[in-house]
Amino acid sequence: MKNHSAFLLLGSLLLTGAAHAGQSPHWGYTGHEGPEHWASLDSAFSLCGSGKNQSPINLTAFADTDLPPLALHYGGSVTEEVNNGHTVQANYAPGSTLTIDGHTFELKQFHFHTPSENQIESHSFPMEAHLVHADKDGNLAVIAVMLEEGAANDAIAALWQTMPTKAGEITKPSQAVAIDQLLPKDMDYYRFNGSLTTPPCSEGVRWLVLKHPVTISKEQVEQFAHVMHHPNNRPLQPINARPVLQ
Image 1: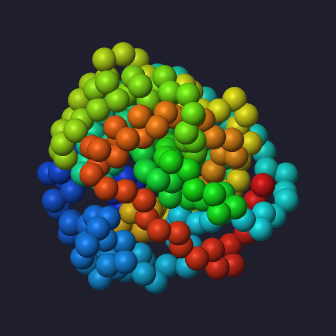
Image 2: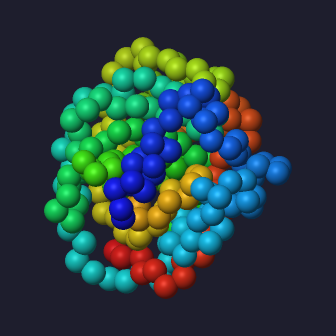
């Protein structure tokens, strides 16, 4: 991925409010601004329609390989929560890293989609969290965590206490929320090459989808859905010739 594309890609994921979003064509998840129209909203969004390595996908037909354990060095906590009109994004303190392919990626933020964007063998989950990491050149790696209905999630409970409920609103967590509180104990994962799941749908993103979900209560999902007002998941995209490694 060329650096200028990478920084555009990173910037699109680090929007911190409606004012920033207003600099590009408005897009959404319903009506004439919904996913099926993204590619026609602006020439910068053309990959949303023409790309061959788009996300999300239905992860299936796995290729067995020796994937190395995820090299995670996480610390710190959430610094602020942002409602950017498309999701609730938790910005993260600098210094937490993922190392993969000899590159070190820093955790920048994580955010949520309901229902899940990716599926695992055609199984959809009530919610999916995306942990967005960037290396020094702006290239991205995303860890996807599936959330299934069950016991209430303590990390989610802490975030939802101060969840910004209006587009453009920014809040501060009332208590420390560390990213490892949102992760399963077993960090086995699938891997595929994909894209942003939002405009401009830039490709070249390393996707690492955890095999094991964590729980979230039905009430917690409903609280998020009420703030979003509608589902905020992009429909599944063709896998084409991509392998899904496990």
